[in-house]
Length: 76
Image 1 (tube, rainbow, N blue to C red):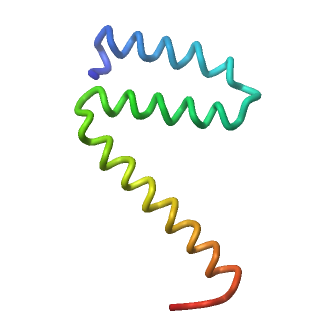
Image 2: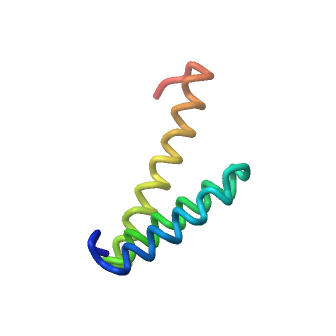
């Protein structure tokens, strides 16, 4: 999706119209911004979504382990 295309204009309109509606719903707001990010990045080539999802899952699991080992004081 090129920034000066009609597709990007429509994408931006949908995003900025939906964002204020989700102002009070924290979990729904996170889902919306994640879904819109996947649409934006997947528009170019959907196969790269696997890379983004995989990277996000690795970061999520690493953060859980960092928190766990920091609280208990354990080390490898």
